[in-house]
Image (cartoon, rainbow, N blue to C red; front, side, top):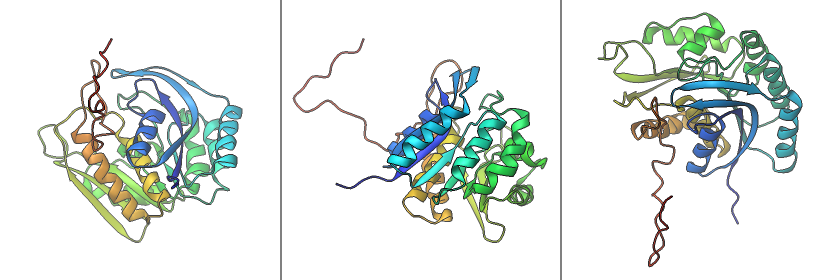
Amino acid sequence: MEIPPRVLTVAGSDSGGGAGIQADLKTMLALGAHGMSVVTAVTAQNSLGVQGAWELPAEAVVRQFRSVVDDIGVQAVKTGMLASAALAETAAGLLGPLRVPVVVDPVGVSKHGDPLLAPDALDAVRRLLLPVATVATPNLDEVAQLTGVRVAGESDLRRAAEAVLAYGPRWVLVKGGHLPGDGPDGLSAEAVDLLTDGSAEHWLRAPRRDNRHTHGTGCTLAAAIACHLARGRAVPEAVSAAKEYVTGALAAGFPLGSGIGPVRHGYAIPAARPAAGRRAMPGP
């Protein structure tokens, strides 16, 4: 029996199901991986924002990690919300000895602008976490948080990438989803990302989708990259395939609640249907 690639997410929980651990596991399922999780924090979260957040003790994170890695094993890891300096340090210490690809999504704020990383944790992310990353995937706000570089246009993406690479990741993917431009919403007509290791450059472009329901895009992209790396793909190939998956999920994003809805992680999976000759059970 074939065993699917084993991918671990070390991140926070989103009770609304659109981002965080929940988005990661949905992405892993959609891409044929076996998803596993280490929960770092619990949030009270919905389509309108984050109403509360509680980080777990470092010991709880260590025990979850050891339970999974020592028994089941992993072929790639993705990190998301780490909340505090203590948890960023803990995650870096756990990931450093691994010999598998690590995707670091340096989550700083939620889609709604709610802080998800303590200010004093930035130094731990820079010094300890980014150096263990195979790929770091900051968005423009996170680049500014980490490096002070502010991106005003596409020409600034290379400078932003260089500033992040200075902290030690092998590759950086600067996500330009909120790149300013001359579109009707003040943004670029294309979603432009730059992937580079400081030598090779890969510019990834996709048309901007007219869909406001984009909750979970960053988590989803990082998890998708980890899935493809777990299959043995090279970084540029893995990132390109992940970008294609997220573009489709964005196009299929749907309204949920009263605010920003999520991307549709299972957009390419045929909808479940009742078995032939059997009547579907009525809903509540």
